[in-house]
Image (tube, rainbow, N blue to C red; front, side):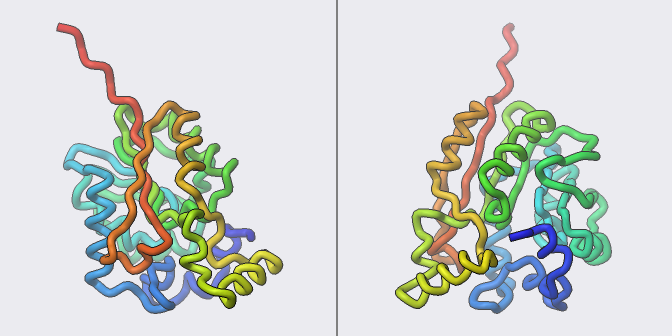
Length: 234
């Protein structure tokens, strides 16, 4: 599946509902305002923001989520490879402390800052293992010591059949694989992320979502914590 082509050319990115544009839906209905609030609160809990911290929002889409996180940070950079979605972000979701860039998450070129926090929300499913490793390797050059990398709404490879339920679901899954047009993309078992975390010398914590989150039954959040700065000797 060519996800870059999808997020640049699909009719979805031109839907008048900002939530549907970026796939914040449950059973094809955009999240309610309460569900959006739950999503934002959950991400903020993982990010541990403060007014002096900077945030890099990778695969930021149309800025709907980015703009709601922005008041809790000093500066936010949003990056997405979909030019149409970045155009929406700049018109509709442009707080003063946010800049939006069109760019590839595996390259992250054009960044001029170091970041305390990184968010990849509801987007890891569009990365295969090699692409995810390349993105994380690039992040090692632009994050500060002690940074947190939050992978939100990860499609859980251990619970794939909660999504594709029953025999009809398995047939639908097989059809998607054969046509190379998956609904989700890559499913990540927590063990896969643990291997990547250990490769870069980071710790990993897995957080399963509560029932207040519409897609809790097949998604989880992962937090990668980098080494904290060494304490100064007296």
